[in-house]
Image: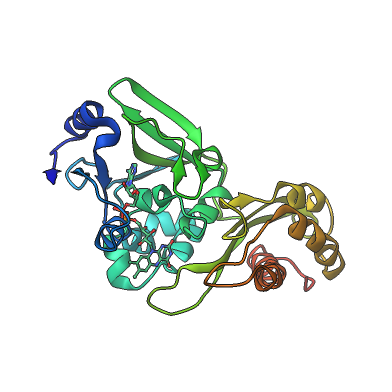
Length: 290
Ligand SMILES: Cc1cc2nc3c(=O)[nH]c(=O)nc-3n(C[C@H](O)[C@H](O)[C@H](O)COP(=O)(O)OP(=O)(O)OC[C@H]3O[C@@H](n4cnc5c(N)ncnc54)[C@H](O)[C@@H]3O)c2cc1C
């Protein structure tokens, strides 16, 4: 097997352009190397992105996070925690600390698995991904990037280089929640996960803005747009949450897997939705219990 470890992004893009699908990108390796060990992937060439200069966090109006930033760094970066605490909350839920010190944000997204924990948290922030090749750069919504389990809308000469959280999404004035149910502590791939971003009208419980995303309930992590539309402009109450639950269940299509049955996932979806909204409401400074 050939192993490339370019010292710059330009060099990495050259190699990617030369070999296309014949070269497999390596980030933290916590997913890929395990799959190689299990014989599920047998790459002819590995392109290691460690030296490509993609391990930066820029907190301007937009927040730009390089694809090679580790999940531990996301947990610990003070500026990022201040601006988008939901990202630290989600990153903390990925595996154990040893996994998080290697696992990268780009790698988490590019596994393309329905249980990737960072995706719902990024979806409620309307995040975009930057895809670079020698031909140039494309910026697309994260929501449009994952096409199915382990399927990405990534051209064969492209590399995901950056995640952008657009301005206007800071959670400083808002409530948020990331919740997950998994099976075991160290290898806790989600049975289900949920992210919520919530903004209330000042001094009331009327919802000004809400975003809800769930993972492991469909082939790809989803924004629950129908639920968001229904709840926006209404007062957050126990009654409203109860009215929204059928819409939550209509929006998702969980299946039975080794980790959980479809029925159990539907039950968890309802419970996580209730708990997530309550936590987000408390953090948004709302009054009445949802
Ligand atoms: C013990 C254990 C526990 C885990 N627990 C969790 C968990 O709780 N939650 C969770 O979400 N995941 C979990 N995982 C899965 C995995 O660790 C994470 O998804 C991790 O973030 C993957 O990132 P990585 O940098 O290691 O990716 P890698 O393994 O290096 O790569 C993953 C895939 O993405 C591609 N890729 C990587 N970077 C790029 C890029 N920049 N552009 C294009 N393609 C790219 C690779 O080619 C590969 O196909 C766990 C794994 C292990 C081994």
